[in-house]
Length: 442
Ligand SMILES: Cc1cc2nc3c(=O)[nH]c(=O)nc-3n(C[C@H](O)[C@H](O)[C@H](O)COP(=O)(O)OP(=O)(O)OC[C@H]3O[C@@H](n4cnc5c(N)ncnc54)[C@H](O)[C@@H]3O)c2cc1C
Image (cartoon, rainbow, N blue to C red; front, side, top):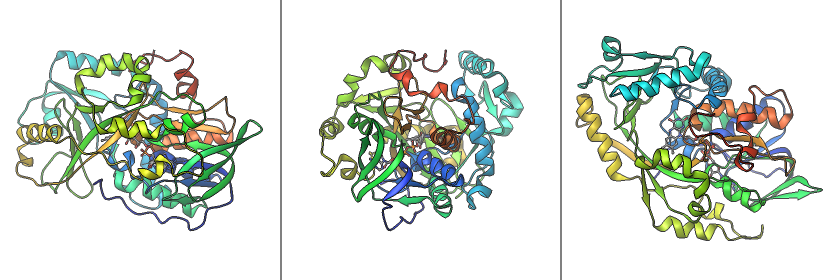
């Protein structure tokens, strides 16, 4: 079972018409709805399950600029500004605390990699720096291990994934957005070569623009429009502990575990490196697209062949808008956590920080990360179909950048001057061969 997410009351009636319909009620869809509602746009958001039921409530809750692909840095600065203002913007505490983030290094090679990032980040590195010795020990109180050094950003922070998107959705509704849950979008209609409506399980909403912010489901929605979106899903497992006294305030990543303190006094903990990849039919279709990133990541990926292959096989069958869709069959994607990865993380955490010894594990869960081949999202209009916008493929780091991405989506949809240069996020890069290398952005 997934984490307990704060509830959001659904609008009772489907509006017959909206200027913009957003598909997906994760951090991206809700942030876009909020930004559009702030500008007075008539926006409806359709979520097949509950708000933040998938990745947006299951993530670690890290809100960082540090370590990002250079293409994402300007948008992550916007996002951090919005996180700092979030309490006032939405009128609720979503747990944002600029408590700092550390990437620890065990050896010179790791130090070299982090220093390279600092150079690449240039002016965007802001307050990020390398720390070591007594300063690092102060940041990781109680650690029995002496780390060689760490990359440290004091102004990066954490927020509560189980609170954030619901609070943003409620704030959007107060500003006039229509938030619909248990309302799957089955398809998109077009007229005269542009978007004209969405067909939901509850009826049709006529609209001029549609934003697909469907996380791992975006590929299927695109496929139905004849659009190629090379997107695959990686399973990441997480646990949360009961409250712990005297643990570190700063969130930290090590190759064996990663943690961050929660508002409830417990910690969200995961294996720092290992993830599972369930082979599905699309794995073969997009093998060439993902080959460069696979070469970099294969050591950290456990490949599995099992039930998900056949489940996805069933999803790809074309259905008419009158038929029950895959989106209704899986209201909330709730994959099983990988027990041995969590056990490994727990043992390593206890060895390094004895304060965690014997602390109860309150819950475990997993989420499917929506990955694109160059690990940078698409936030973009689709030239082939005017009125259609994509905001998807956040590749494991969309929570922290989410409020900024929502702002950018609203800029693109309304034709306002974009808050950052949107060209690194263009959809065309995935289909016209101009895709840059993973991680370097060059
Ligand atoms: C274990 C884990 C740890 C992570 N840690 C971090 C972290 O620390 N920091 C960070 O920045 N990021 C992190 N991420 C990534 C982050 O969670 C995601 O990038 C982000 O939540 C993506 O948000 P989203 O709104 O695009 O997608 P989602 O949250 O997946 O939302 C998409 C929504 O669309 C809905 N939907 C799909 N199709 C339809 C349809 N046809 N009709 C109606 N609704 C539909 C789905 O039900 C879903 O609720 C992590 C992810 C995982 C899984």
